[in-house]
Amino acid sequence: MSKKSMKLLLIILPFISQLAVLPFVNRIDPIILGLPFLQFWLFLWIVLTPLCTFGIYQLQKSEGSLD
Image (tube, rainbow, N blue to C red; front, side):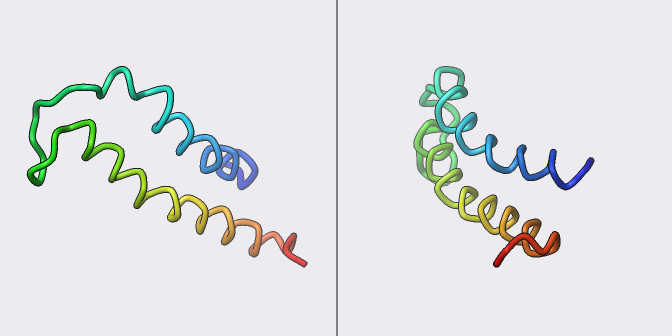
């Protein structure tokens, strides 16, 4: 996988996971860490989105495109 396609994936992944997938994860069961599945899913992506952003930063840094 090229760096450009990896960067594109990291940009699109949080949007897809938080918007497009919501109708499919909108359920109460299973309960994970005491949270209904939908709340756990949203909380999970609140944590993972900055990691995606950090990955984009690292890819741009390795390309030398940060000025």
